[in-house]
Amino acid sequence: MTHRITLSCLGLLLACGCSAAPTDGRDIETTKQNVYTVSVFTTALNSGDQADVYHPVGGTPDSFPIIAFLQGGLVDKSLYSGFASTLAGAGYVVVVPNHFQVLGPPGTPPALFSSQSVVTDVLASMTAADANPGSPVYQVVDTNNLGVSGHSFGGAAALYAVEGSCLPPFCFGFFLRPPQLKAAAVYGVNTVNPAGILLDVNTSAAPVALLQGSVDGRATPAKAAQTFGLMETPKGLVSFDGLNHWGIADVQNPPGNTPDPGVQTRDQSWGIVKTAKYARTVFDAYLKGDSDALGKLQTQQSESGVTVQFVEQ
Image 1 (spheres, rainbow, N blue to C red):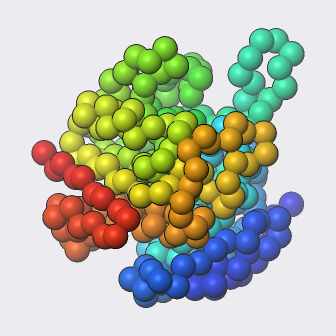
Image 2: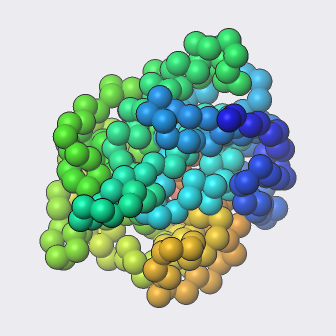
């Protein structure tokens, strides 16, 4: 069943099973730029995955690019409501699916682990929704511009989607990168495998930004720096002082997950607003062709608690 609610982007007030999304009145720049009221509805994608779709209210034809958000392992889609709402308020259709797959021996039940297939499923589903007169996003989706974001396991899947390869456990069988995929911004992600080996993922097909908490004890800053060093340009590494592995989510240490040994020293609201702000800068630059946003990346504009590294070529 599909349900819909409307919320003010300034208040980020969510209901219908979504956790309350925090705000940060200190971030005046972000608040002023998020001019759209946001609505969210839950629907089944073409694959059958249930997804929360956050979108601006109103708009003109083809005005809002798509962001596919790939959840962290064992994290429900509802726990990214703050991040998704903030991006939607800046003029994006943000789709956060619950994707289940079996990772384990026979008999292991399906669990919340995202996949590269979510990227193409989101694109196909939103293209169909844009053409459907009964859809809340009828004719307002920019189906030619797709960004991908994600957290932890899902963020790693997003990197391999940019590469266009198919690497288990993020993909099984075959994956073809859609030409509409033009930028990625992921949080708490690196390509150092469990054996400590740094894997080289080719990101030349689209600009990629790694968003990294300074006290992340599960995906450490050192490993993110190693991954950043191997990435192709354009590439960014944005560091957030005092955020741990859960700085992008609505809550710390979601049920079923291993707690982060790194203790977060920032409010959860600060992490959500800031990570969304810098992800949005990347997407504005490369999905909307915003020269001001690109200029902020080129000049590596940082602020208190945030450090930006950007290499264009």
